[in-house]
Amino acid sequence: MSADLVNGLFQLGAALFIFNHCRVLYRDKLVRGVSIFSTIFFLVWGFWNLWYFPFLEQVISTIAAVAVCVANILYTYMMAHYLRKEKNEQVQT
Image 1 (tube, rainbow, N blue to C red):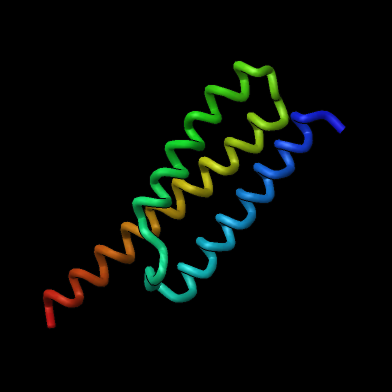
Image 2 (image 1 turned 180 degrees about the vertical axis):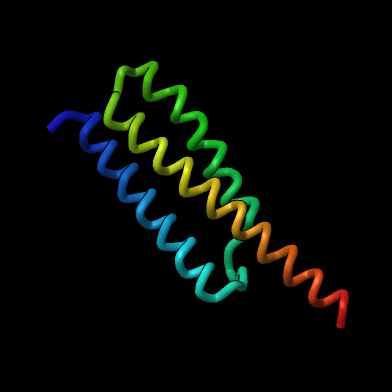
């Protein structure tokens, strides 16, 4: 098994877990126990991987890194949305 394949599988697994976070957040519609700043850090790291993996000529890792970035973009957006919504509801009451 190549290093690219192993890394790509880990990246793909990460994307699936992040999409699971999105699913749970959509169900609960509340952000609890997770900092949006941590999520943004991993999003930025994901963008770095989009440059770094092609530099290493790791095609599988690059494709999987796209999935991680898409998942983190969605998760960050959802967190911001639900945090903003909760803050607006608190102001109105």
